[in-house]
Length: 123
Image (cartoon, rainbow, N blue to C red; front, side):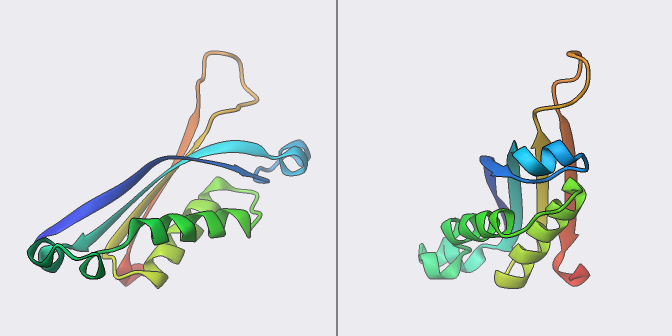
């Protein structure tokens, strides 16, 4: 089995996430990376989009999940993205990294990252 991964890196989104009322009211920009694993053996042999996971459709599912939900915790958003991808696509594992770039801390912290990994058996 040839299990490889596809990574959607640097997806910039705007959402109303956070614990503070200000974050939930005015929203914030986040950066996402979504990585998913799949057996690409058939796709490599056929060179056919039908035999792989269409990353444009995965991207659309990620955007739908971000735009249609509001959570206080980025951990919850990361989990929701992983579960949505696993439920809609034949993948064995999904890893979502969310980077919060605007922080209410002193200037010596550039970002916070939340990472969630889920196997298809977990969902």
